[in-house]
Length: 80
Ligand SMILES: [Cu+2]
Image 1 (cartoon, helix red, strand yellow):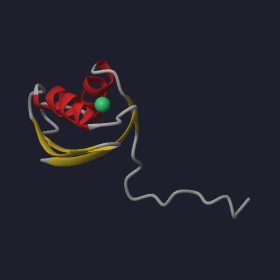
Image 2 (image 1 turned 120 degrees about the vertical axis):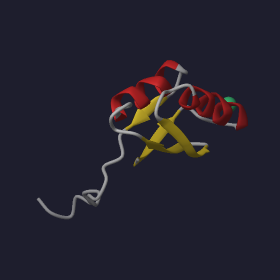
Image 3 (image 1 turned 135 degrees about the vertical axis):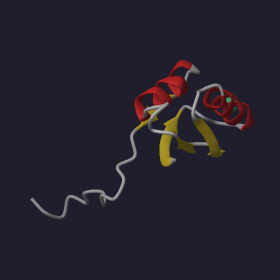
Image 4 (image 1 turned 90 degrees about the vertical axis):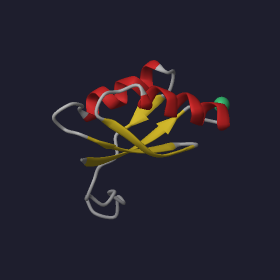
């Protein structure tokens, strides 16, 4: 299983959390680890689900997914 963390915009309350959790639970090969306002973490089986599919499920529930760049520090803009 691989882990995937997503930043999700448009989530504001507990209803959003359960809507996103619900959408993720319906996917094959995906285990919901944690869903909070603004983020969701899942474990998925790469042979049965892809990050794209997972993001799409959240988007079709009505939220906007921002990809999390794993292992890369955000650019601060200090360097040009
Ligand atoms: Cu809500």
